Amino acid sequence: MTEITFVKSNDKYRGFECHGHADYADEGEDIVCAGISALTINTMNSIDHFLDDVLEITSNSESGDIQCYVIGDISKEATLLFDSLYLGLTMIADQYGERFVKVEIQEV
Image (cartoon, rainbow, N blue to C red; front, top):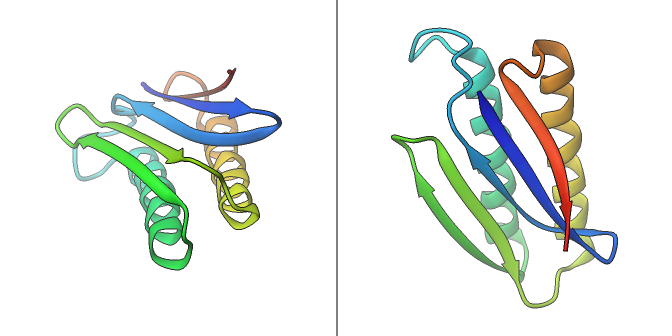
């Protein structure tokens, strides 16, 4: 199962942690894992490429772990991208079930 935790402070997402593989299908065939990866990587790349927000990112492709946090102030555009990521990931979780994807929010 992939567990995704969004870290939220003052009603804004500050980042997320994504742990594990969905195990929906065999490696290379897992559409749930591919969807999660596409959304998370696109969000990080978009913030990095288009915005001045500073990201701290660590990842391990073998374990499926990604940690991504905005360092310092967060722009309204980055907030929108995190909101969009949350929406996309919760839609995947709704469609495929918490057996494969679990999304939660941690207030700090």
